[in-house]
Length: 274
Image 1 (spheres, rainbow, N blue to C red):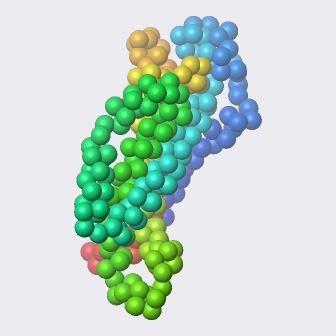
Image 2 (image 1 turned 135 degrees about the vertical axis):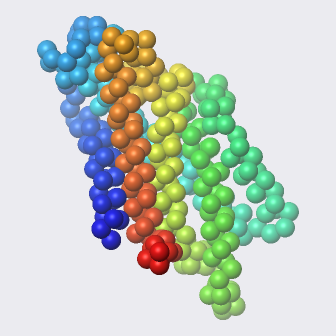
Image 3 (image 1 turned 60 degrees about the vertical axis):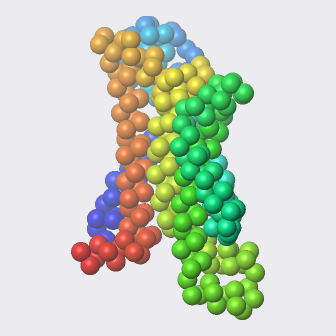
């Protein structure tokens, strides 16, 4: 119990730092994100907590707005992945014969399809925006969620109490809502927490390549791209967003690990026996 609590609390603190920055940025920022009056590549001090970038913008302001973009990307992508993935996964689990095989093959193809290539296709159709990046990441992750959902639902449908419910005349929608979803949601929550961290990394990667939120949006990935040329003279521009990105992803992964211990009784029993 202590280990689970420590893991959850550590993850909550690390991720909470980023969430706090994002929430504060909604009501207060040290400077306007487009303000370039700070002087090019100024060091910490003179009203700038960690200095300025190559355009004279306050780095701390950029980090605060970037934290908001990271959380929007993670939450938006996971929501899309959950809505599409769970729906497809349940349908695939109930399907039989060629329909089941076809859906399973489509999911495997989607999983193998590179997120970056999918993002490029969506950007070509919609232009480079944060919404396009979120849509691309969510669609790519939905296949992973769908395959996991299909496996979990099929496992539940094989239980005796499902057979008894079907024999008693319970409809499939009621079986799904009353028996299937309550039994698979703990594992799904853990997986979606992991997908959140992957979505944040994916958005940073897309923004680094210019496929994410366009300027003047201060995505951490864009900050890393803009700071790479001046890393030796002004390392804070690259280190600060990189550190926050690592803290958020590690924090979310620790939360997912703690939730797995708390919500999955199989894991608890296995560790207790060990």
